[in-house]
Image 1 (cartoon, rainbow, N blue to C red):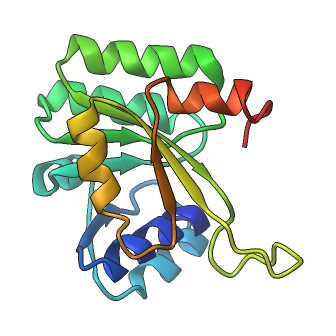
Image 2 (cartoon, rainbow, N blue to C red):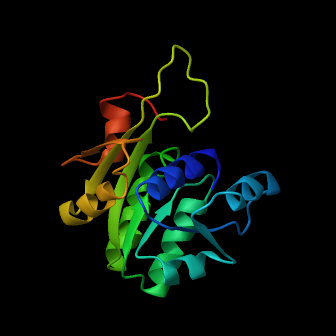
Image 3 (cartoon, one colour):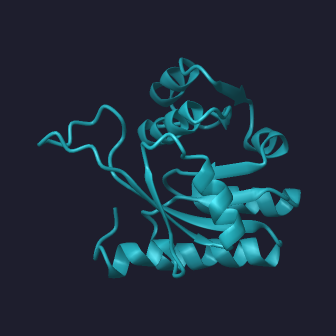
Length: 172
């Protein structure tokens, strides 16, 4: 629930959903603003988030992406796992995808392009795009979470994250 996580959560809450999250291992500067959000439920661990959520988003830094998909695999998670970690490169993305596939975890890639709420983008611009790929039915379900209009969603036949390298030509 850092700045981008709170932006994503705000969109889901505005669309009528409850957001479950864990601040385990996060700094107070991240946890305090998340606790102030109305429409969220805090859990003491990532495992508790998995047990109470039908769709789990992983958006984080460092090795959190790999750690979180491994937890999903160990738990035999049967919901939709959405990986929105765009900063780790193709090798990490392929590794996460292989873990999900080998554990039969329903996996959707997400590429969030835009800035967190409250970030001054200059020029009055406030554009956010969400690219989803993976199983079409699961991607459509994830797309419905963002019906408030804050994010313009696109379902892609190719890897959402590869778009970052090919179409957009950079990591974001």
